[in-house]
Amino acid sequence: MLQIQAVLRTEKEMEWWLSMPKVELHAHLNGSIRDSTLLEVARTLGEKGIIDFSDVEHVIMKNDRSLREVFKLFDLIHILTTDHATVTRIAKEVIEDFAAENVVYLELRTTPKRNDSIGMSKRSYMEAVLKGLKAVSSVDIAFIPYNEDATSLIRSLPTNVECNGATRKKIYVRLLLSIDRRETTTAAMETVMLALEMRHLGVVGIDLSGNPVVGEWITYLPALKFAKEQGLCVTLHCGEVPNPKEIQEMLDFLPQRIGHACYFQKEDWEKLKSSNIPVEICLTSNIRTASIQSIEVHHFVDLYKEKHPLVLCTDDSGVFSTSLSKEYKYAASSFGLGKMEMFELAKNAIEYIFADGSVKNDLRAIFASETKKLN
Ligand code: 6MZ
Image (tube, rainbow, N blue to C red; front, top):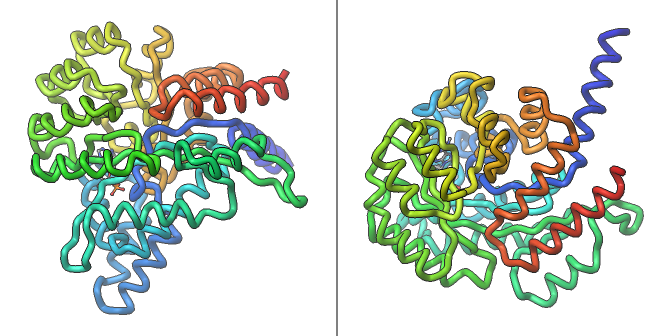
């Protein structure tokens, strides 16, 4: 009996985190795939004799992974997902999953991939992603800026309205193109050029990611500088491993946001705080990969106390078996924060999005109407 009550309490508690509007700013497409989809794709490739399904199944279902193992998993995921149809499918599903838990604004990042053997270019990869966005039908999605049809659709529907008896959710989606640390300067520049060409389709910025022990960040500096000059926003994975020189140089670059900030030293915190660069915080990812030894010593606490701009994110909800609602619940219980404080935290994230002011205004209105319901 007591056990049943505890389960019901936990479910009710989770409902609150699920229903709260949220803003997701650090989610990698290929890290956010449903396990069921990965397994299905792997089974199909196994039947064709391309991979050994039982080996792959074991790797996909493993729960605890070091940072090194995470990047080995990404190599496997990319073998499974890099054809146009699968890219379209995962893009659609990932957006539907975020919308289902009331993420009202999603900045989804992905690395445009070139694979000559299957006729894939960085552009055709991104076209496949966009096809996935267009295929979303279970929720209302606005991803094309300045498009009358899209904005009128989204504006005409307040959040989570009753529509033909069913509750429809809505989500704004913008895209960031990632540069992988394995790439060359030329390939990085190609990604930036592509981002510029796809601005009218909702691409708002550039991300530098990939295995943090691979490559030198200055390889990408020309492309990142160019992106900034052209008005694209830039976010960098920064301090995911100890690398004091790189961390200082990245902060000097003044990106619009950074992700992680795990291995910062005193002078790095000082620079970060004086420049007020918002930090994308990925709690479960940092703990699972042991980039941070335990949740009690996570830098969230200090940044939150100091009111430094920060936003809770999932990083790779598929790889780390998490969701944005779970990240909010995790933060609240770990750091003793109340629901209203977490609601404010989610709302503040609006100020750090890369989309334009009109989207910010719409999001502020969504949070304002939720505030009224809460009071
Ligand atoms: C650094 C990461 C990452 O781009 O193929 N990625 N880079 N640190 C992390 N923390 C664990 N998680 C994901 O998504 C997968 C790619 O995102 C980057 C890696 O480059 C990975 O290959 P896309 O959609």
